[in-house]
Amino acid sequence: KLEDAGLGSGVEIMKEFKEVTERDEFLAKEMEDLTKSIEALKKLITDLKEKIDIEFKEGVKKINVEFQEFFSLMFGGGHGSLSIVAPTKKSRRPEGSGSRPQASGKDYEEEIEINVSLPHKKVKELHALSGGERSLTSIALLFAMSQVNPPPFLVLDETDAALDEANSRKYGDMLEKLSKHSQLIVVTHNRETMSRAGMLYGVTIGANGASKLLSVKFEEATQIAK
Image 1 (cartoon, one colour):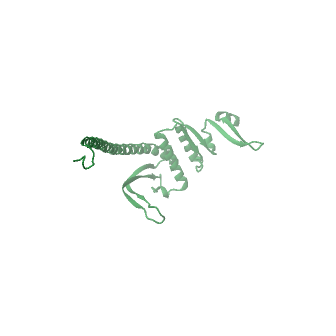
Image 2: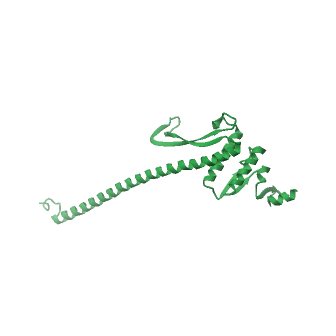
Image 3: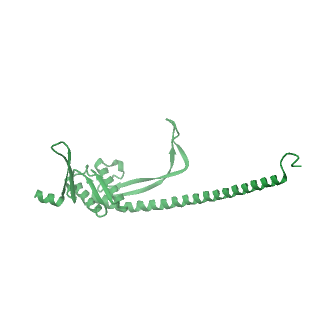
């Protein structure tokens, strides 16, 4: 009857049925593998988030130990620390100007706050500090972060520009501490900072108008000055 209806012979139909069945079983297996992969990736993402969260909080604790030490050295006392603020919803601004940000729902983001307490002052908020005090706090925090995982090289470009002579000495003490773990390249015009260097490099303009590089060991420069 199938042949009379023009659907082909029974052998051909059974062959096609077998091929379709095998294809269906193959796709079902592929779907099962994809489902397992999705679940494995979700678990991996969850584990990574937990690990990152733990390591992040441990990192903040380590930074706080160094931050307190550098902060006390810079200000002659007081207290400086980082604190993790409770998670807040991230906001996404839809395309188009003038639109208000909308909460993304499941996305949360922790924030970091810098807490300071200067000796003999009641100021405890960073924005209430003077420009010089904020510079000192920033230097102390940057140095503290570098000590948690010391880099092989550390470049400091005029980070002492806002410091007076007394604070420059404290800054120099911190440079000597940092130099025990990292090679320091310091750009400065501060004589006190220069006095802590092992090698001095200067750039000057020659008679022909071209830049010229000068270098001298600090010990040799001291002997020449004497």
